[in-house]
Length: 89
Image (cartoon, rainbow, N blue to C red; front, top):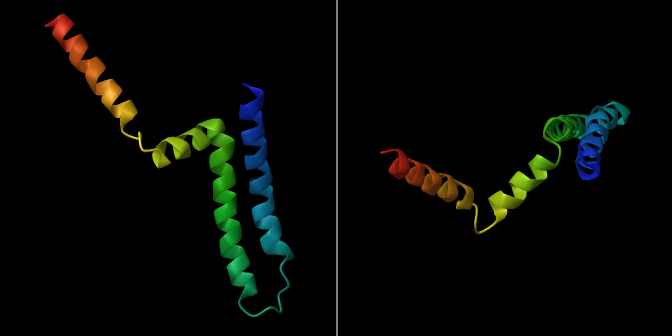
């Protein structure tokens, strides 16, 4: 595992801990703020869990998805399959 991957996973662990902590530290008397912080905490926790599991692959997937070349991996796989089919058949 690379240092970069460990940093992404460490950031995910931080988010995984900070989400519920922020929701628990919100004052109970604040009208509506408790619910908003709880929902935000759930979202941050899920994001942290994804980063823990995927590491730098999650960031790479987001970068590829936002790119104008997001269909490139599919195109490469399709062309490779076609070449293999020609060689075999």
